[in-house]
Length: 349
Image (cartoon, rainbow, N blue to C red; front, side):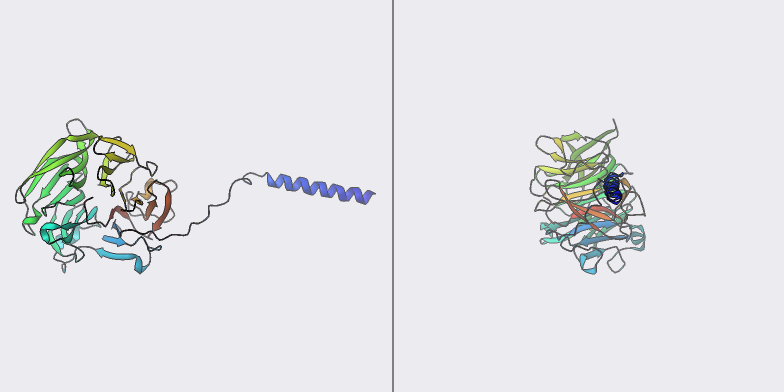
């Protein structure tokens, strides 16, 4: 009888111990998230400006591991072989913008424009050969190739938008200038026949998105504001403006405070489907709808284990979202410091 009581007591104690262990702190919390297997993403190649390698790099989204040789389809930096000067080569730090355009005036051949903090270039694509280039102070943040072969540039410290007559020769220095504080973006829009720009009105410090008409001619360009398009940005410090492929009435616009879709007709901003992230440096969408973006590692919480350690405005990660804003996955390049991302699409829209 006594042994039976002892056995029953031991069994009860075991049950109590199991119940107590099952309620220890954290026991009900879910385990670590399942590691998502990278998937190939159909779409156009993606151009990244890489401060770490000091190159423009093009990656294939169908390749799941961007650290492999097969993933990187093209790379560029100025060299003497490509026609660049020693000063231009020393000035190039990896790029702040890159756009490919098919040029009707040049037999439908493709060309690319590149801006970097202290220089800008117009090159043949994919040859990389110099067509026009110049060392320019002012902290250049964006570049665009106009249909007439001239290059538009935005300088954040210089507080200007310029159009250089690059169509008139490799060393041409003629330009038109429009004053715009903290100028960060230039994007040609054939629908409005104008240049979308972001910056700050120095007369009242308003942070704005507006458009400029490019007048004059290819030899002597002129810039005037299309004031009917001017709007105040929802949050301060405008950054990126890029085409919304699939809808010519929309634009992607980012600021330090958020990311938005701008409606040209209503002149209104709506929150981006990608959860209104802050400090997005580059954003765009594939023609099929998928959204891609780059956001500095320093602004992520927690900071990724693999991240850019060179500066606080770049990232080692590129994020992919569905057109509806659902996160799909990432591509991570060890040691990379990606600042800007562009869809390699030679159409303006």
